[in-house]
Image 1 (cartoon, rainbow, N blue to C red):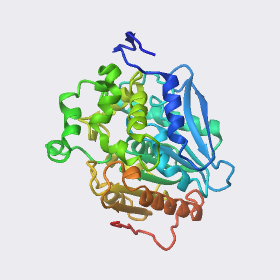
Image 2: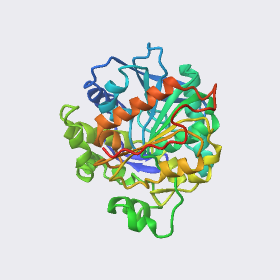
Image 3: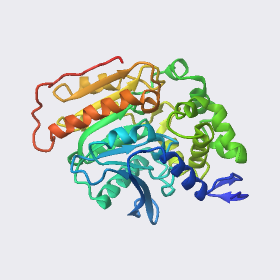
Image 4: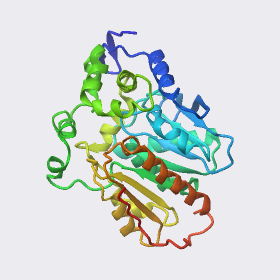
Length: 361
């Protein structure tokens, strides 16, 4: 479908197609060995009139504590394909397209940062109620880590263990730090393009959007070659289709950010709102552009709580993709800890109290 009209206040002449997105997502997930289900969950009027969350579930008949996965900015649930089989081997796994991204509804979020954040949190909670998960392990990557942390602050009784994969939005923005630490492509988005939504260029490129994605980040497509047939074409098409629609979640992220690498309301100022009984695992890549101080900050602010920090050498921001075997291993270890310890029933931690672990792998 080629459109040539004004939609939601921005000019659209893309080759975006809901059918194409559905097709390419299915093609990516065909690499899985584990049976899976795909379905919409109606969460009502959280932001829009009738919001729906696109969901995939694996091994949902298992009685073990479920794992719920939240992707990052501009991504979609299919990009977890290198992780699904390993993580679903022993427990239920649910992954969603965050509201405003992928195949989920694209309502108009609030423009005030804390309100947009709260809307995302409520969308996850309404999804949880509809799926009927009393408690779960919550994993978030990048923006998903920010939303997961905010969710755990408001609904601590629902989260058995919080796993943050290279989370965005934790530290305060130091003066001048953005120019010194962030790679060129991030600086370009965060400075020259700051008045616009971060992925505006994908839509502005129209039918050439897929080519733009493949040329800008060819490394991402290459890393899927061992999983997805024709990954060099399929992955850019998926990312393009996810981001060529109305920029709903993208606009909400724009409201949250200052620059691109920093949050207007960083989590470091709110760590005291996290339950001290909540175990947290932080995974980050040694080559990531995201500030990697999150684990240390959590340990310092929560000295009597369980905090586990895993540094994965050779991995960048997309730690789940750069080193999937190690990522899966550490997530499974966190899940095992969650099976052994329920923060709802005890604030007394076992033998590894006050212990932060760092592993260079």
